Image 1 (cartoon, rainbow, N blue to C red):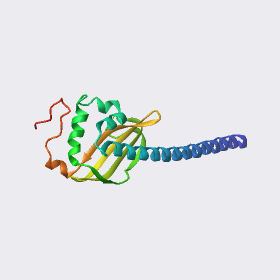
Image 2 (image 1 turned 45 degrees about the vertical axis):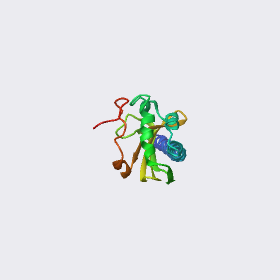
Image 3 (image 1 turned 180 degrees about the vertical axis):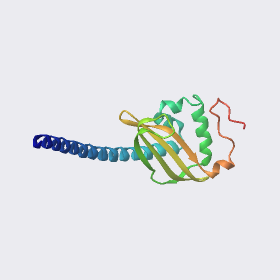
Image 4 (image 1 turned 60 degrees about the vertical axis):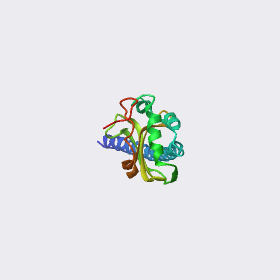
Length: 167
């Protein structure tokens, strides 16, 4: 009986050591992903909005987001965004990094969800950014801007084709 108890005790101790080591690895890896994603988000937002540049956005975008609306949609969307004017100030993006499925999307693996407060010539805005990890780099999976200034502007371009929405 004592040999069985010793063997079970050793197994439990080994499992605890492995669990602690793996937990430590996850903490370090998550911290590293968070720092990396925050830096990427900061650079991607600045490159995209200062000045407004759909080409810089396309360089960083996931293929799924580029398929929405065709080739002409991004330049039209950024022409619409540019009505906000020049970027006057932006705060550091705040967000979280996770692994697994991102809630409400088809994103699997490492992901990051950020928002940054910005001030444009047309007024304050909140920039939202969802990133997905592909290999060793991040890609923009979703980009949105929320601002009251849009209420004073014409309708945004439609993803349904080349013509702006008339709704």
